[in-house]
Length: 436
Figure 1 (spheres, rainbow, N blue to C red):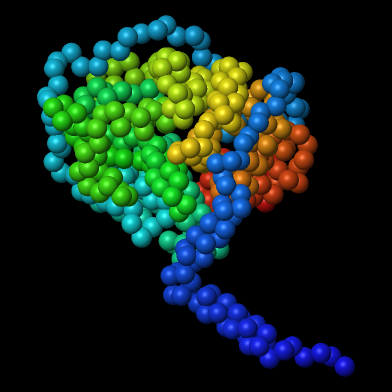
Figure 2: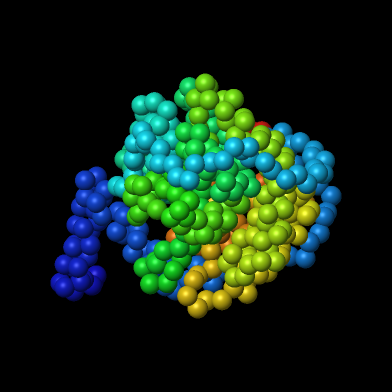
């Protein structure tokens, strides 16, 4: 004789099933999904604090490249050592203050991880483009195809890379865009004084749900400055809003964590002006070498998280210069310092690999495939509530393939394009490997 469920338990089960059914109704799901995800994240982070996850590189080795390797989708250039140059930006004196007119403020509210699309919208709108933040997001952070709600579909894409925004401007508008690393405050002022606003990628610290201060990446649109007040005027799409004043020192501190990268959007008729303003930065190789020199100097001047960023930036610049063995050594040193960072008031910047993937390049191109896999595992499983970073999955797939674990490689590479159907590197390798 079968036992019947106790009546109270039966009612609880029926209640759960009813709630589950209601939860999946689109209007209810769209309102509750983010709360459920936030609760899930809080539970996971409570038991596994992401800032306590430590990646430990292996002893560096340089084995012969595997015969199963396939070429990179982006051709690689060989760079020769460059001379050290002292940049001269603008021969004439800059105004003491500038506040550009014609800026149309766009926020990232009611969307997920939208600072990239929102800032790029402002940069394009400034020059007369009539699209919206959603037009950009549908191209550069489309989200998983099986989720029909556009806003929810893009939630899992935690970051938009600078190259994705540059490509959008160059390929899908009549405007032009470029990015460089190793910028400085005077260069930004020169552009603004010439009537050309600039986007930058920065880090900033904000208290998380536990009350601890955590580091995140963030884009900002720089539209003015004031030397007397010693501040930049930025359009902040998140907390600080339009025409926010940020002092030079605080601005530089945040900008450092992304190797002083900047993005310029401009119309064809301003191309010569942009070339003149860039000066030495017209040469990408020079800009990368210059960024390397800045980071090397800062390593000896800073401490804590800032010193970690300075060493990490050295690896980033060396990767851009395709000096991969040196880059791997720099990243090894950065991760060793990361493990020693204190936990008193500011968390370790555990999200850094969400935004910057240089270590994958360095370790992969020096044959350290297991380090690529270990770093990806740490990033995907320990620092984020769900493993939804297509760049980490991509590099793990390439390392798995190089080690002969083809099934794992195929699964990871398929997941990159499920998460982002426009992720061209993933599509490229699936095609090269003959995988549907």
